[in-house]
Every structure is written in structure tokens, then in C-alpha cells.
Image (cartoon, rainbow, N blue to C red; front, side, top):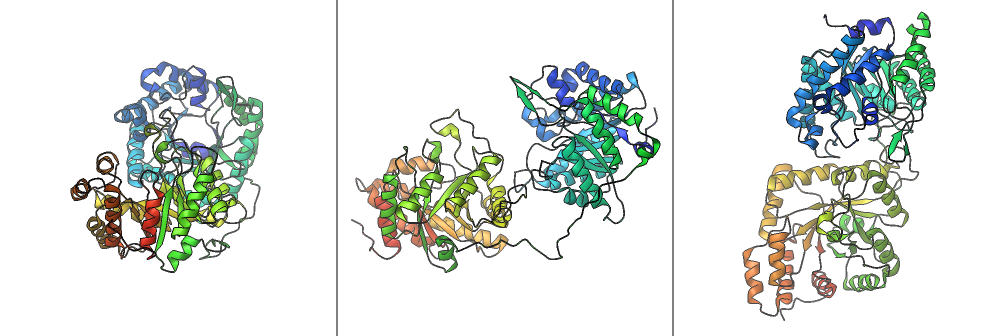
Amino acid sequence: MSHLNFLERLAERPLLADGAMGTMLYARGFDFDECYDALNLTHPEVVLDIHRQYAAAGADILETNTFGANALRLAGWNLEGAAAEINARGVELARQAARDVRPDILIAGAVGPLGANLAPLGSVSRDEAYRAFYEQIVALAEAGADLLILETFSDLAELEEALRAARAACNLPVVAQMTFNREQRTVMGVTPLQAAQTLAKWQPALIGANCSTGPRGVLEVMRQMAAAAKTMPGHVPGLSAMPNAGFPEARGSRVFYPATPEYFADYARRFIEAGVRLVGGCCGTTPAHVRAMRAAFDALTPSAHASTAVAKIEIHHPAEGHAHPYGDAGIPTTLAQALAEGRFVTTVEVEPPKSADTSAIEETARMLKEAGATVLDISDIPMARMRMTGLAAAHRVQAGAEIETVLHFPVRGRNLLRVQGDLLAAHALGIRNIFVTMGDPTRIGDYPQANDNHDIVPTGLVQMIKERFNTGQDGLGASIGKPCSFFVGVAANLTPTDFEKEAKLLRKKIECGADFALTQPVFDAEMARRFIAYYEQMFGKLTLPILAGILPLASVRHAQFLRNEVPGVVMPEAIIRRLEAAGNKTRTEGAIIAMEILNGIRDLVQGAYFIPAFGRYDIVAKLIQQTTGQLQPSSS
């Protein structure tokens, strides 16, 4: 059979795509935690039957069951090596259904996102994304797909890598679609205007939206994209719309979507009247929805089919060179001001209580303040042990001891909603210094069975705070009113086993907007000096303020534990020998060693981050006094 020309048919009239494959598979009893793409190999008869139903309902285009069939997603089921086979089989099944029902149906190779964020929000590089998309698209094209539909993307950078791969892999027409929320933004904050302007540069056949909300929200996105298209020079892509059947509803253990086929038929007409050239359905849509839309398509007059009328909206373009201001950041934090003035900073890590009573932590804070601490670091669920949250403890310390805090803010165990809600809560409670970190895995703590998933990595959160929250926007770009004024810290390691890896990671954190860094405990001053020199040889002067981790050792066993069981800690044999020789004065020797290490790197760092061993804040208080010159060192 000759290769069907999608573009020629699209020029003649709007085309109707099919509905949701996942919804239909779910209705057949396959749970969402299964690999639906692999059903092309394990249950091809089920996939084929669903394709046939959509073909019989009147679809002009069948999408392959390959939405998640890229190697990165498939790795979750150890199927990355089967990516090419799964995609090829997906095309074959859709083509077989077309032959069985109506041979002129077009086959669209479905390509979805990778299921993992690109750097800096995630760990996937753009090159890795490109390779995964390229492998999938080559398989779809070689198997005989007529076009590609890149769908449900939230990140423009990721979609651009998919478009780059499509351009390199084949010459098939491409439909590029993003998914938008009720605020007409993607999860990454991309607006329809931004999407249209960026995607048009890649010259896809169509751009549009799928999944998203329901038909009404997608129609508004279409209007904004159509209006944006009018301002574009050169190639102007057409529009595609494939909304969900409304918002999902849970009924018992099953999920249902409320939008009826009749409702979809009405919006099919409205989409075409708005100039949309490809209409279909996403989550919750069924052959019944496609059948109703087919009837609506067929009832339209030829003039309606050719209509490109849109509801015009006004588009405001920022002035050239204009950048979003940080807004009124208010008075700088004590920490920010001290670092800006070049003063040597001292801070102490303080654990929240394992109760609702904060009197003891407030008393400790007052004692450390009197010893000369600049600020106090309040940890959050340290070592995954059950404690009061750091947010509450930091607020009580600031109120009860009148000393500024640095709130440890782990991303582990927080979804994106909780992350942003906690940031707003922190700001409302007067906490401005945030130390962003990954956090300790729950498997090492009191509740190893607890969920510790996360939606964002530390570098991504730093970037979101500095570029969004500190400019008055949430993670989606929606207004949060007055801008926040967070001073953001990150983790660093001055004695890493891999200098190159750590230097690159630190550089990335700086590029994402970090204001300062707290380091792992340093036990080898000479190694720390070599690492800083290595960093500066790679990237130039290290201007990020560094607060070096200083942990006074308590015993030989303590040092052996850190050496053998705590990742990232380098413990020289010479230190262990010194502690062994100290007899029953290991705490005193540990404190002396701590000050020697600090003095050995003091000219390279901007502060000391004291980490008490076993709650001995009294020892740290004396070290602070020595650091600030209030107390002379003692070897007794």
C-alpha cells in the first residue's frame, strides 16, 4: 500500500483522531502500574481489538500504543532493550486494525515524555533525552507510521529534544502537543503563547494541546495559540486538540471521567470553528466519544470544514531586554548581610525535638546565641528519624530565642504541591534562609516503610525558588502576590572521592542560583584545599560563600562509623590514631582536631557550620567562642 499523505488530507478537511488507549486498557482490567506499551507483545489481541473499535467509530487516525515506549520509561520494567520491538509492533497492530476496518486510516506513531525531568530539575541530560527519542522514532518510522504525534509534554526543552530527534530520524509529518492546567500553563509554567512561538521554529505540521483539563480549557488554549500564530513570520503550523473527558473521578477502586460523548460532539464543532485541524480525545475518551465526534464532523458544511476563524486575544510582549525584577526583597537576612560584608559566619545544626515541647531547643538556641553563633541551622527529619518538622522548630526558635535560622528543606518525601505549600508557610512565618538538600532516605530511619519519593531534585528547587518564588510566582508561573525573599543554600563536599563530579555538580548549583553552601564534615584540610583549587582551575574563582562542615569527634568508634558507614565522609587514618592515643580524653582531642581543620581552611571559606556529636551543644558553644576570639584554645 502506498504511503498515505497526511498533509494533503489535512489541507482538504479537519481530521478526527482516536481516543484514549490507556482508558480502554484500564477498563479491560490492566492496572495503571503495568507497562501498557509492553501489551503490544504480551496481549496484542487486546490492543488490536481496541484499535478496531476506534477505527469502526470513524477515526481518521489511529495512534499506536507506544506513548511510553522509550528506553528511559521502559527501564522501570527492565524492558529498555525491547524499545524497538515494542514500537514496531505498535505500528503493526494499528495498521492491521486499519486494514480490517478501513484501509485509508492513517497511523500515527505516539511519542510521550520520558517520565523523568531534564536537568536541572532532574537528572536526565538533553543528550540522553535525544537518544531515547531518536531510538523510538526510528523504530516507529521504519515500521511504517504515516506521521508522529508528540504528546502530553510539559517541558518545552524536552519536547524540543523530541522534535530534534524526529527531524534527524525521519521525514514524517509531526504533531507537537503540550498539556496545560486550568491556569493555561504547563506544569513547568509554559504558556500557550510561549509554546506556540517556540514550537513553530521547528516547523511541525501541527501544534496543540492534549490531555490537560477538559474540552473547555483546551479550547481556550487553542484560541491563544491561534492568536499567537497570527504574529509569526514564515511557517505557521496548524492546530490540534485532544482533551481529556473532564477531570477524573474515583468511584471505589476505579477511575471514571465525566464528559459525555454528546458534550465532546459539541466541542468538536467548536474546535473546528476555532480553526483546529486535528481533533481527538485523550484520557477518559472512548469509541463512543469518537463516534459522536464523527457525526459532528460529518454534519458540518464544507465552509465550516475550511474555517480558520479564531477568537482574537491581545498578546503583550515584554520589552526587549526586560527581565523580571526580584521585587522588594525587604531587609536582607542576617546571614546574607554577614556574608555580603565579609564577616566570618558561625552556625550550628540543631535537631528538632521528638515531642511537641520546644522549650529545650529554645534554651539551646539561647545558649548558642550567647556563645556567638550568627544563625542556627534547623534540621528536618535528620537521619529519617521521627521528629517535629524543621519548619515548626525553626519558627519557635526564632520567636523564643530571637536568633535567625536556616531551615533545612529536603525534597525527599515531598511532592511538588507540598514543596510549594511549605515554602509559602516558611515565608509567612518569617523564615528566609533555606538550605535545599535531598534528605535522608527513609530506609535508614524509624519508618523504613514510609514513602520517600520526590517530584523535584535540589538543583531544580533552587532554580524554582530563585526564578519563581522570589519573583512572585509559583512553580507554574501563576502569581503568588508579593515576591518571596529567600536566601538559598545548597550542599557541597570539599573532600569528595570524585573531584570532577563534585565540581560539576557545585557549578550546576551555582548556575541554578545558590546563595551559599553548607558542606559535609571536613576531616582533611589539605584535601579540601586541593578540591577548591581543582574547582577554580575548571571554572574560575569560587565566589559562592562556603560554610565548612566542622564536626567535633566524640570517640574512636564515632570516627570509625563516619569513615565506614557515612557516604561522602573522608576520615584520614591519622585522625583515628590521634583519638586512640587520647585515651579517655577523646572528646577534648576531637574538639582540638575540629579547630585545627577549621584553621587549616579558614582563609578559603566564609564560615563554619558546626555539627554537634550526640547533642553536645556545649562543646560546639566553646568552639564558636574560640572561632570568634572569645575563648582561647585549650588542650586540657
